[in-house]
Structures are given as C-alpha cells and as structure tokens.
Length: 150
Image (tube, rainbow, N blue to C red; front, side, top):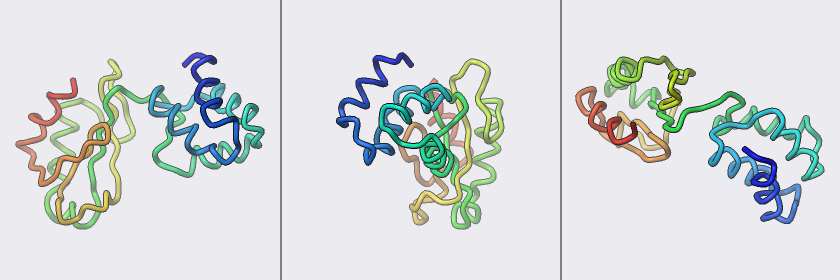
C-alpha cells in the first residue's frame, strides 16, 4: 500500500488520534494486512505511541500483521456450531483450499481462520467469507460457496 493512500485515509479522519481503530480498519480492508512500516506511519501521523498502535493491532482479531489473501474464510468452531458439525465443514474447507487455520495459500487466493463464535448460534454451523455469512452450512455446500470467491 502506498504512502499516498495511507495519508488519504488518515486525512479523511483529520489526523485525529481517536480515529486510530477506524484508520487501521480502513487500511486493513484495502491492504488485507498491516505491515510494520504502515503501523509506523500511522503512529507518527496520528501522534499515537507505537506501543499503543501495536496493542490495538494485536488485540483485535480483525487485524493481521501477516499478509492475507483476497478471500478470507472464517469457520465458526464455537460450542453451538461444533455440536452442529463445524468440524466437518472445517475439514472440507481445508481439503478444498489446501491450507489449515492461520495459513494463506501460495496464490494468495484464500486465508483460513477459525473463530470461537460469530454470534449467530441459531444459524450454525456457519462460515464467513469476506464478511458475508453463510448459515446452516454442510460439508456438501462448502464447495458451492467457495467457488464464488476464486
């Protein structure tokens, strides 16, 4: 991500320190991750200590300090989804994209994460791809969902 784009995002929020999370969210949304040099630039431009920016970037699971793919898949493995078969769904996703949770495929098409709860327990098991929820999943439906994101 180029410096001009980062500057544009920061300026949109008038360089206010209280916009830190929003600035990081917008950068993450466009870049898919937060490189160290970007974090340094945000810290400097918002006049927020680097330690505070890092604390935010590492606390929230939304942020990533490693490169992520174009398509981010989250499989809910919380209690309700687990009881309803999320293990089979996770296995199917892993088989189809060839990676395990915490990994990104070599072509940067997919990143895979598990998440403890998506807050939609009555709709589980569930996966989220690029922020779009897919409820009442079955292993047989996983391929159908993922083909739309290749």
